[in-house]
Image (cartoon, rainbow over all chains, first blue to last red; front, side, top):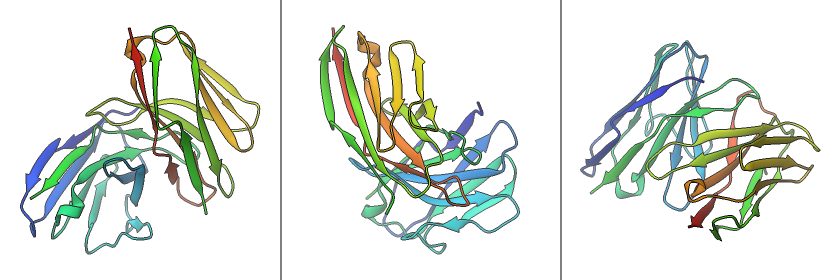
Length: 113
Length: 111
C-alpha cells in the first residue's frame, strides 16, 4: 500500500492565523481525501481532492475556510484558515480508489490558543 | 442518512479472553465495509474489507464478519499488543470514495 507522509506532525497556533498541512504520497494516486478527527468523535470527511479539478467539499465545510491544492498526483495541501479554538483537531489525509480501502497518513495534531 | 454505530465504546479484556466488537450500519448502496486499527498518535491502519453479507476475513487473532445490517470483529485470545482503537467505516454508493466512520471501540487487553 502507499506510504503517506504528512507535515507538520503537530503544531500550536494562535487564533486568527492560518496553517497549511502537506500530504506527500510515494506513488501516483487519483483520489486524495482530507479528514478531521475531533476528540471523542469519528473521522469526518472534509473534502475529496482529485488532480486537475476543484476539490469537492462535504456539507459543513467550505473552500474559504479549508482551501485545498492538488498540483500533481503525489501531493496535496490543506489550509486551515482564520483558526479558532474549535479548529483544534487531528487532520488526516488518505488515498484510495472507488470501493477500495483508504490508507491514511499519521495526521497533523493542531491546537489553537 | 448514512450512519455507522460501534459498540461498546470501550472494552477491557484479560489476555486470552475472547470477545467481539459490533458495527451497525445504514447506508444507501454499500460499497465496502472497512475495519481499521488506530494506535495513539497514529493514523488508522487498514485491517479488512468486506463487500457482501456472509463474507468473512481473518488475520492472526482477528476475524471480521458481515451481515446486511452489521459487522463483527471477533478477537480470539487477545494479547496486550492488540490494545488499540478499532474503527469501522462504510463506503457509500456515491461517485466518490467517501467513507463514513463510526466513533470506534477502545480496546484494552491486560496481561
